[in-house]
Image 1 (tube, rainbow, N blue to C red):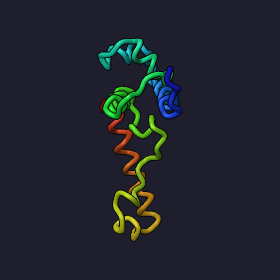
Image 2: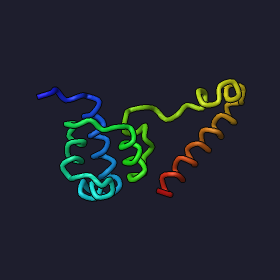
Image 3: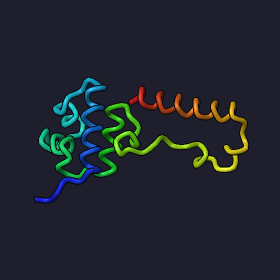
Image 4: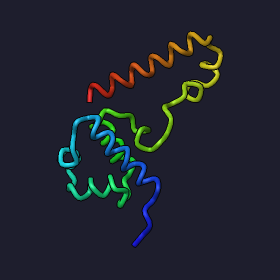
Length: 111
């Protein structure tokens, strides 16, 4: 039998946590994803790979950004906007970050 991937185990733990936070169970996620309950269980246990499209769909269903599931940090405005962001004052940088957070929260509420 193949050895479990640490990455898939971490993704599975994040799915389980997001399910709890959303008040959803594995059965509900399976129905929403149109997969078997066994598939969701294998994802959560890290027993089977999950692709990026599935992670994105789960993220939308559970109101989380996709990076939450794969241990990435939120997008950094420095990288998104390059020199334009670096030249802003600290207060303006904080305002841009707050706007990004607001838009991300609004996107999660709409799904």
